[in-house]
Length: 284
Length: 255
Image (cartoon, rainbow over all chains, first blue to last red; front, side, top):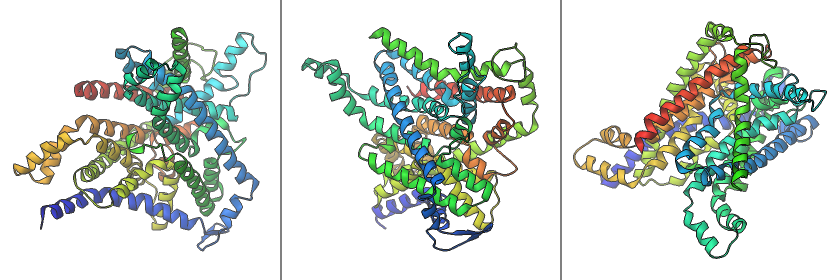
């Protein structure tokens, strides 16, 4: 056997466990779910078949369309706000904070990342609730007489999400900014560019892959999240994941839950193709 | 401009820390509700939480699932990264895509897919099922980190070891892995924290033996309580200690 053939056999042997795991516990389950999404319910029994009825229902039933719309709106708003807040934060840490303090500044900025994910949403409930810190403070200062209704609204969900994703995006954008050779900005300014022009023509285009990668991750994590809207948004309006969990729990309607998941995945795939030009997922 | 920058920095930190500070402060609340007014300091809630058998069992379950699933994910990811970085295989881009793909899929979908398969195979929800799901979500991360860290300078050392008669497993265990201690440790600790903190897969794939996030979730259902604050503060303390240890032990040494 030649050396190259031996090498190749070894290579396959090394990569096989990871590929088999991914095939068995990721690809196969997805295919099973796809098949199940075309099944129907007879009472509490799942009837296998090829019936597109679940998809028809998702795109005609106002509740389901509403959930899809809510999820999309919340996710887009959260992604945009998070990028707009995180970019300046990352830039200030990268360019204004002295080099020896940057690591600490970054570590501090993402510290709440390490609180439990379920507890993080709960903490916002304590801050935003009717008897929460914000309302008590505002009323104590005499700004308002009546407490604001923030918890159990979309605003609370958005605040909870933005809090988390600002941390994530600050990390990815900072990692990009710090890799920029300082000479680029200097060269642009020597050639007569203003600070704003330097930013829009040099720094922003060079950091775009980092921003888009972070924004894409935000989109994926946000649109698929159940906890944050469930704890902070209440049940006034449903998001797609909440609707999926509702199907699993109350009615045991696995086919409809599967169809909703396939739609969720399709939305993420669309987002992926929309941003794939700039995505660098293997270098997060 | 400078003043504005630091004002922004201060506001950002205030926003980031607000919920954490509120969480920790009201875990000491001497009263039934973790909201203002603050009635005084007590450690009763911590005593209650640490004496709660279900909660402690869930904590041990979480640690077990996190460590075991991260070790599996790290091993699989490291071997795959080694193969793709060192051997020229056909379909390289496709395989890299397949291994990274779970990163782009919501945990809820991974959980529901596994639940569907396990249901039809008659496999009951368990910690093992949850662990399998956690390997799925952490494998792309471990693979990506290991793959990105494999540079050409290690290639020479590996070739030298092979020329001197080392078997491939010896090259992997005695040369490649030790040269990548820092990134592999980082991948491992990141995986542990992701698994330790993961909710939806654990929620759908466990039944009687639950993990900590699922147990906390069931605590939330009975309303606001300083006990939940105490659990949250303890989890935060443990995670932050881990992060600081990682920072000191791994990254300081790597420099």
